[in-house]
Length: 343
Image 1 (spheres, rainbow, N blue to C red):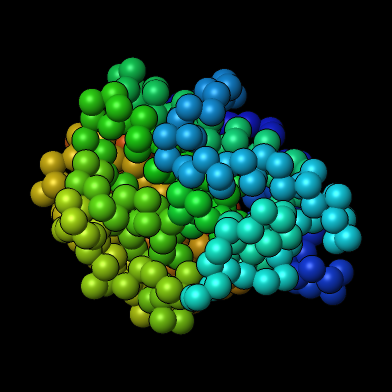
Image 2 (image 1 turned 90 degrees about the vertical axis):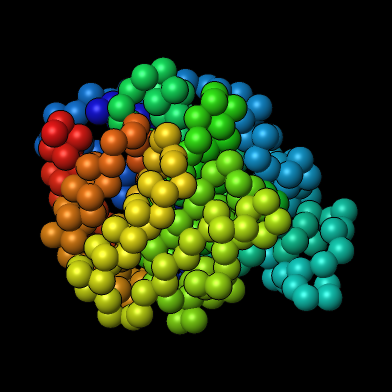
C-alpha cells in the first residue's frame, strides 16, 4: 500500500479553539501527522509526496465564490479593523440572515460555520495541498492500485460545497469520489469518523452515482448536531443513496463494529466498484471531541472488515484528537486491514 503525504499542512496550526488567548488548545494540531507517520514507519510502508493537481478537481466539487473567499480571506482581513493573525467570524449567517455580503468580515460568517474553522495565512495552501493528497490517491486507484492511504490534513468531511466547519475547509473524500466517477468507477464512501460526515452528505445528497454511509455518534448530543440523523436518506435521484448510522453515547467496540458491518453490507448492495474510507480515530475512548468508547482492538476489527471487501480501497484521513494515541490507532487499523487485503 502506498501512503501519500505532504508537509504543507504543518503551517496551518491554530493555537486555540476560541479567539482569546485563554481558549482551549486547538484540537487539530500539526503534531497529529507526526504520530500517523510513526505508524507508517513501524509497518515499513512506502510513502510519496503528492504532486500538484491544480484547481480543476477542487472546482468540480466546490462553489466558485467559496473558493475565492478561501483564497483571499486572510489578505482581505488585514485591510479591516479586525486585522490580525487569524480570520474568525463574530456573526454567522443563520436562518433568515443568509444574504451574501461583499465585505470579508460578513463573508467570514457566511462561509465559516463556526470557530472550528479559523483561517491563518497558510490555511488555503494547506487545504489545497490536502486535496492533492486525496486526488493522488484516487488516481493511483484508477491506475490499478488495490489500496492507497491519503494522509490528509486538514480533514475534509465537514465541508459542504460552500461552507467550512469542524477543522475542515475542502472536502477531500468528495473530491476523490468525483475523480473516481469521472474515471468510470462507481464509488462508495464509508465514513467511520465519530462525527457525522455532514459536508460529504450535503455534497452528495441528490446524487445516485456515489453511495455515502456515515457511522458516528448520535448528533443529538455531538457535533455537527444539525445533520447525520437516520432519517436523512437522500433526495431526488439520491434517494436511498445516503445512510446514517448514529450510535448512542458510550458505544463500545461491539456496537461500532456492528454499525460498520451494516454499512459495508449496504455498500455491497449498491454495487460499488471502489471504496473510499473517511478514516477518523476520534471514536476512541476519551477523545476530547467525542463520546464513544472504541479501543485499538475496535479499530483493528473494522480494519479487518473493510480490508476484506473485494474492491480497491482508498483511505482518506479525517479526525482523531488524542494525539499520543493516533499512531497506535492507525497501526491497529492497518494490522487488521493489510492482512485482510492479502487473503
